[in-house]
Image (cartoon, rainbow over all chains, first blue to last red):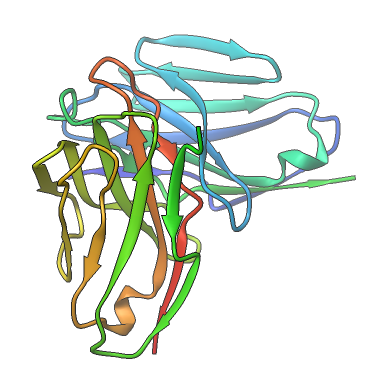
Length: 113
Length: 113
């Protein structure tokens, strides 16, 4: 089966660091995505990992361990505008031609002053 | 470029009515996708297309139909609307086989009563 797990909600303080975890069990693996979605808006792309390790992009970093079926998104120097849902998505088996994604339920992050 | 556009933004349907959700992209992307997002949940793939004239089912295709007569347009048809189809519908597109990021439209919020 296909299963992607993320915490439902997290709260953090402005200026702090927060780590959002994602574990997956899918039929095959062709890469993992993180998307940000503000309330009432469309998802926007944050990061893509296909090999093990850390990918850094400004205040955001994403880590992947394929052997553990595990990823995390690290947000540094949190700002109020980072309050949003963060969606973990996996490209599973048969997706190399189609680009089909399997999404987790998303983690709603609330940043407090 | 306008990117991915969707119409309408909001719609209320009565049970048993039909409608078409429009999706257009002006980026000459080959791949297009329809997702639905229920409250507090991630995105579920309804249908996708890898090019004009080619469509296939995703995870939750029942109650929906699609067509792809041009590269630009990928309409989603709801026949005999049911309350279970109350959701936010997102259309997305992706340029080519070796690029992975999907670009999302602003969404259509549909209520069936």
